[in-house]
Image 1 (cartoon, rainbow, N blue to C red):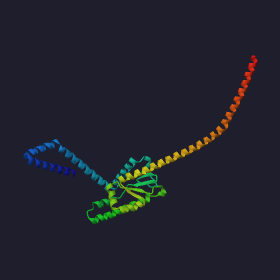
Image 2 (cartoon, rainbow, N blue to C red):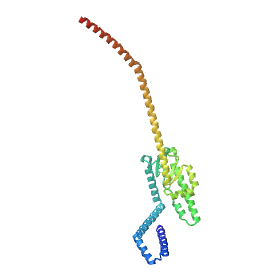
Image 3 (cartoon, rainbow, N blue to C red):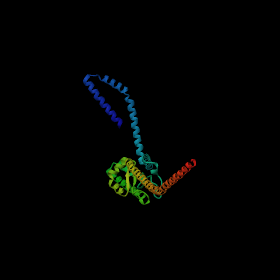
Length: 292
């Protein structure tokens, strides 16, 4: 499709140039054809269009592969878990999250985050079969039937997440995430099933896409960091309080030592010095008598 658009634009521009040249200068058509051929060759347009065609085909094949992955539940689940794991590992330290580990009395979510509010579980497996059927259906009645089936699938899946992973009494946070690896599917659900999602949000189940999960992970990380800072500040406060108590004890000991022992020692030193002076004076007197 992209190649066809570019070719159309090139052809239109060439036609305009030919028309203007013929009108203004009376150039022969053969001369214009030769000039166009030479310009086409010098610019390497044939090679560039060939590469563009190849890239377009690669994009088309990639899109088909992605669609195929979304159709197969196992491959879709693997893709969802991989993208979710990349988001978590890019934004969180290893000690803050886990992948397919047992938590909450034997439950094994696809991932979990250790937050200040408890363990936040993430489920990345989501039923999309009826969604794909709904988007491909051509008849309105058939489309509506698949929409109803998709709505039923959503409700059942969110109910399971609420039951398994929103249990604060076992150590979880009061919410869990249902991860949708496709932004298109996520925004389609927000648009068409907002009331259903809102009802389950009240029960603690939040539906997230790659972008919204990244945002929420950052908020959780900020909360953990703030709590760590608060704990560090509390620890410093306790250390200062303990140091203050120790200093108070040392101050008491110093006051006792200074007011009693040190001053007593000072008094004894003065008495000793006076006695020494008297003794020295007596020796001096005796020495003078002996010399006479």
